[in-house]
Amino acid sequence: MRFMTAGESHGKGLCGIIEGVPANLSLSSPEIDKELRRRQSGFGRGGRMKIESDHAEIFSGVRWGKTLGSPITLFIENRDHKNWLQGMSEDISAQGSLPPVTRPRPGHADLAGAIKYGQQDIRNILERSSARETAVRVACGAVAKRFLSEFGIMVGSYVTQIGNEHAAIDSQPSSEDLQSLFEGAENSVVRCPDEKSGRRMVALIEKAMKEGNSLGGVFEVFVTGVPAGLGSHIQWDRRLDGKLAQALMSVQAIKGVEVGAGFAMAGRPGSEVMDEISYVREKSEARRKKERKAFTAGRTMRAALKGA
Image 1 (cartoon, rainbow, N blue to C red):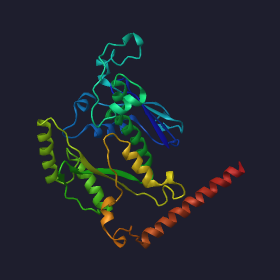
Image 2: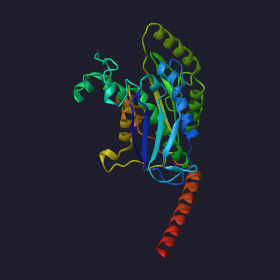
Image 3: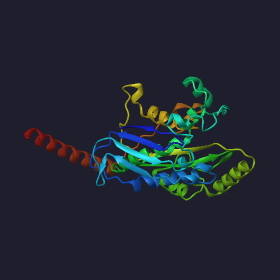
Image 4: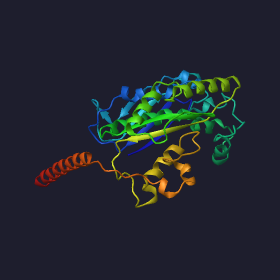
């Protein structure tokens, strides 16, 4: 499965094309819109978040509520585009209707992008490098989450730090704890499951806003129900940790990724940082029965295909 996105921050809209989704998967716009609403919620969000109320329109790849196996195209309209009809027009006759942006912002793609692509107007860079692009990424991610749910795989997240405020969260939560943390985050305006820390985070954000400043933070993403064997040790570009790190680092403003204990492992002996291996007989027996059933079904299918 792979996806690509297109579109500018103040253009007509954002488009995503997803290839590799199997046929006959139930999928609807409301399922995608639910994730888009989650993206736009939260305390201290920017002004653009208040303007847009995103809706994902399915252009292709779905018929009567089921995927076709062909590429899925999603489109999210930029409601603010009506105020930029001339400034973002594709027609050459509108050229000069908006003054050029000539002052690059530190920490953004402005300067490097303008030099690389030979642009005199930085708007030609910032329109695409804007975090507005993450809206269509969320829409594509919603389709991926819908697919993963068919296998009992769940993806969740929660905030552990904003500014210098750290949440009091167990560094090694169980699967049950992770579900509880996720539910707590869903009910928090700063997505922090620790209520006391969450209130202090809100106060920090309010203080930064009054000062005309902003704050960074840290969040954790977890996945449960993952089968062994995803990714591969065979080649560098197939390693799962590498794929996950690259995906996260490609998100605007992300400046660091660690897997598990990450950097904390550097200060511990090897005997303390190994992944634990456990065995539960009941679960193992149930898994073997499920695998035998799947193998038998696959063998029957192959026989039918051969007969055909």
